[in-house]
Amino acid sequence: MNPITSIAIGIVVAGVAGVAGFGKGYVAGKADVQQQWDQEKTKQYAEYAKAQDEARQREQEMQAAADRLRKDKDAQIKDINARHTGILNSLRDRPDRATTDTSAMPGAANACAGSTGAELARRDAEFLAEYATDVAKLEAAFAQCITQYDEVRKKFIK
Image (cartoon, rainbow, N blue to C red; front, top):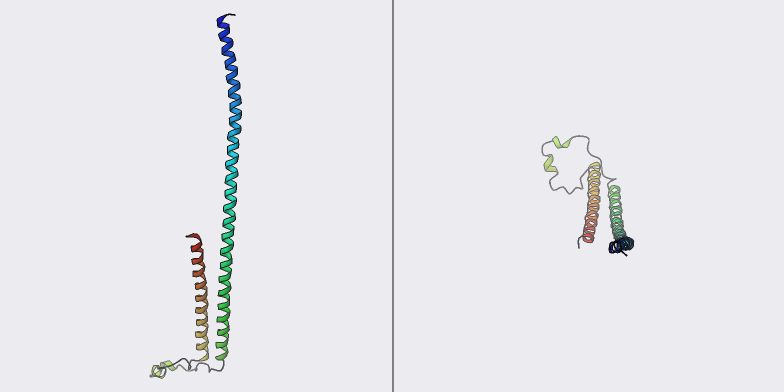
């Protein structure tokens, strides 16, 4: 055989072997990369599911705490409303405000000196009782809000 032909055949065989090896390596490498990708994605999905479960658990705990605080606040408001009703019932026997304007009379301020509120007219006393009830309700709602905020803050800032 001619040395050039042998070299040419050798080059062709080496080329075919190289192409076959590259093809096999490419397919094997592609499968390996795909397998690594699948494993990474599976790990990410598992971490995501775990994080979702933990977040759901924290949310349920915070909601339970908020419900408990709201229940306490509602009980306070129920007590406030009961006291308010009792105060309004006690004011029914009070006389209504005088029809004449006594504040324009000289010495009217001295007549009220040392007043305890027992002399207040019914409408004035009812107004003050309603105002005090509103303040007490707002205080209860504010206290519940602050407590709930603090609990949530403690959960997220550790």
